[in-house]
Image (cartoon, rainbow, N blue to C red; front, side, top):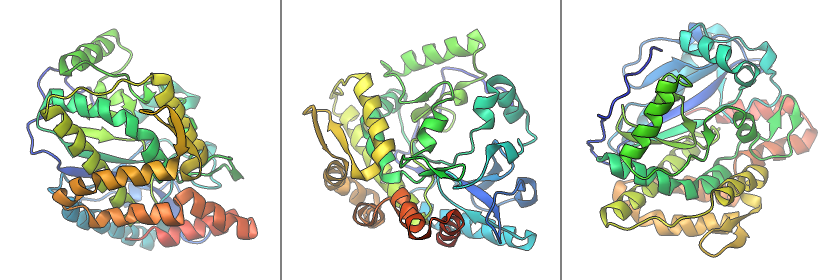
Amino acid sequence: MGRLPLRMDHAFRGPDFTLGIEEELMIVDQDGHGLVNAIERLLSESTEGEVKPELMESVLEICTDPCDDMAAAGRQLRQLRRRVREEAEPHGLTIGSAGTHPFAHWEEQRIVARDRYRDLVDALRFVARQELIFGMHVHVGIDDPDKAIHVTNGMRVHLPVLLALSANSPFWRGSSSGLMSARMPIFRAFPRVGIPPAYADWEDWSTQTEFMVRSGVMADYTYLWYDVRPHPNLGTVEIRVCDQQTRVEHTLALAALIQAMVREMAEHFDSGEQLSEYPYPMLDENKWLAARHGLDGEVVDLPSDERVPTRRLAKRLIDRLRPHAQDLGGEADLEGIVDLLERGNGATRQLKVFEANGDMAEVMAEIVAASGA
C-alpha cells in the first residue's frame, strides 16, 4: 500500500452510526485443519464487501461495505463467510475463525507478497513475523471530527469489557496459554498498540499524528494500531480490541454493542458534557485482567475504584445501552451477548472441548464446524 496523504481534511461528515465489520479468518485444510498458505487462490472480485489478504498467506480478511444498520451488516457478513468457504472447498481448504489457531506455528507461515507487509517485516522483524493472530474490527460512522476524538477517548473505558466478552484465544503453539486472550499480549509486542492516549480534540490528534509521519517513524496514520482509533479517510471510529469470533452471531452481537456504545458517546459530546478522567495505568490494568480471566474474573469499576465481577459489569453495561441498540435496530443482535454471558466466551468454549480429551485437533474441528454463516 502506498503512502496515504496526511492532511487536515477528513470524511467525518456522516451519516452517523453506519457500520463496517472486518474479520480475519484462518485458511485451513479440510482434513487436519492446519493452516495453509493459500490466500492468492482465494482472492476474487466481490459484488458486496471485500476479500483481502493480511500479513500472512494463511490469513484471509473479509470486510463489509459501510452499512446503514445491523440488518444490512449481518446479511453481508454472513454472505461473505459463506462465499469464502465455498471458494475454499474446491482447493481442499476451508475456513476457521478464532483469535489464534490452537496448534499452528508462525515459523511455517509465509508473508504475503505485498510491499506494505514486506516493509512491515523489514521494520519490525520477529515482532511482525510472530503475529499469527486474528481479530475483528468494527467501524462506526461519525459526522464531526471533534466528536470522533471524543468518542475515541470515551471508548477507552469500555475496551476491557469488550475484550472479556470477545476473548477467544486460550491456546498458542499447541499449548494452553493460561490466558483467555493470548492474542492480546502477542499483539502487544507491536509499537503503537493497546489503549491509546487521550487527545484534546481533532487538531491535537492531527498535529501529533503529522509529527510522527514527518519524523519518519510511520508512513501514515493507519500504522497507529491502537485498540480504538479515528479513521479520517473513512469517517469512522474503528474499534480493534476484540478477538476474532468463531460464531458469526457473536461478531454481530459485539458490533451491535459497539454501535450502541458509540451512539452513547456521541450524544455525550452533543450535550456538551466532559468525559471523566481515569488513570491510564488503571485502564491498562483492566485490559490485562480481561485478557487473563475473560468474563470469569474481576475488573476495577473505575467510577467507584472497586473490583467487581466482569460479568456483572458487562450485564450492567448492556442494560444501560439496550435502548440505544433498540433505536439503532440492533437490539435483537444483543442476544448474542446474552449467550456469551450465559454460556461463556469463545475461550471458555474452546477450553471445555480441550478438557474432554486433551485433543487440540478436536478443538480446531469444533472451531471449523462453528465458523459457518
